[in-house]
Length: 142
Image (cartoon, rainbow, N blue to C red; front, side, top):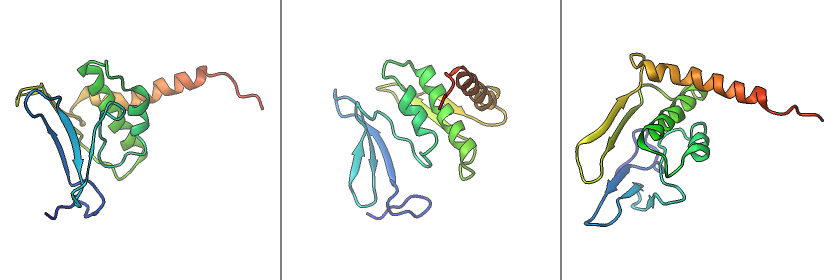
């Protein structure tokens, strides 16, 4: 099988699969063109595709397995918004689909963009919150 990422990078994951067999816990996999794969685990319960240098630290620091779906979706879009702010190579719009276990019916579908008022506020609100926290940090006395 020959499959490559859209940008032709032979090392980029070519396929992302989530599946469940019988009563087993669902699995999430990134499959590479060479046939090897990486599986999501308790330590790394998500994959971030594309540019990861800017948004991944937000996911790593803020994600909590006990988090409900709504805050997790906010975190996902915040990660994208931060990546987009820091990298000109990241374009709009972000698309998200979440499915309920044992169902092929999308629980949540969202496309962030100019016509999504919530998404349009996310990046500026996050920037203001970061500045506020930064301003509250102790002074650095050298």
